[in-house]
Image (tube, rainbow, N blue to C red; front, side):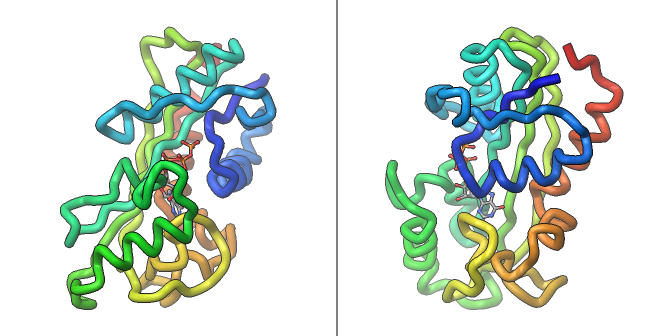
Length: 199
Ligand code: ITT
């Protein structure tokens, strides 16, 4: 059965499709169905994920999966958080956002650069689904002073992972999925999805 993947972020779409592969569903990126981008007016990852899933489902008539995610920096009291994709402005590139983050943290010492990625995944069967399936995952790390590595997307080049002794951008996709916020949220999702009604 078909499910629309409610994201316009290429890095995210690639990771979500890889992780969802084993479920054997027909996953269609919303960009292939000309779904207009939803306005993310929520104040939480959960609200924004629901807004995006509902928008894609309303437009296509298909069940939808959305991912709302971001990075929380302790020294910045949780910023950029839900604003991670637009930290340097509405049309900001990943490079612009990384630069804005490094600028905001230029006086923060190494021991106080703790951060975590957050990911919320939402599945709805239709636009008026009263029981969305909602799963969450996080990933602890530290913000480096300079970018390292060219894998992944977003803030990966400045996200230092102690357990692997490298940045998220230096991990293979498989290594990243095994420990990332998105990997955790998606594994929880796939476990719950088995027991849920799909239509
Ligand atoms: P969609 O809403 O279309 O899915 P988006 O990029 O606007 O795309 P979000 O609002 O959820 O999505 O913003 C997520 C941002 O958080 C993303 O643009 C990255 O900057 C950052 N981010 C999320 N997951 C990440 C990851 O695994 N690695 C690096 N950065 C990540």
